[in-house]
Length: 372
Image (cartoon, rainbow, N blue to C red):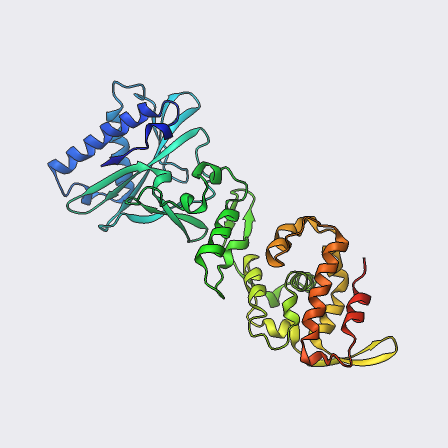
């Protein structure tokens, strides 16, 4: 069975390709009618090759004759048909041995996409008895994303019109696939509509980008404790900068966002409390007065130079500042950001019983430590 887009959604020369798919559809239906168990004989690769051979036969006598290419392997899509040089349409082939029409699709980054392919369709076959198949425009059957080694689309061949992931995001497939950062749109959707309070999906905020493939590597995690001291120090400074709630006293969730953010960098830390707060209290001399301050506050003091570097060059961190601070001002100047952050830090510390705020002048401390 084939489902085609309305004429208003079709691209140039697409009607000719749809006619080819209709002929292919009839050919595959004829195969099932002659032998209901024919598809069951195939492996997934065997089914790909069968669809390719059937498509070549369907192209005889058309503009596509001799111009159907079997790509397969590590490229996307599996089959490309061209009318003109450097321009064509694609057919991705999926197979399942179950009687379901839902499966995992390709990477959202599409770094292996054949560059001159315009629209892509999907042919999914059920390799069972009786066999079955559906053909549909690829973008119209993408319902969601899931994570394997990288974010991949979820395919639902029975998806109702208006229910794609792109409808949910209020964008289009082409807009996302051509975007430099498609994860940004997904992140916004998940945070606003999918995740419940206290839940997090660590891959939403990044991962390590492989420059050769433009894909994110979500499989490798390194433990925080094995990082070089300089790297650990920089990460701690960044977390103080982004997540001042680590200075809170009895908040059980104060490290949640730190954990999520570190995971987005491919780093695991299962002892976040020890990283920030281990050691109780220390003596600290401030203006010739000795104060007992919690170790987390002392660590903030030791990271002050590294923290100030983020304020002096805020542009690379703007998207994180706006998201994690809920910072809506258009002013990204160092002085404005620092004032915003210092007010938040002082507010937190004044609510921290272990600081003993009648004794420790937190406002003066923070002003002294962090100056433009």
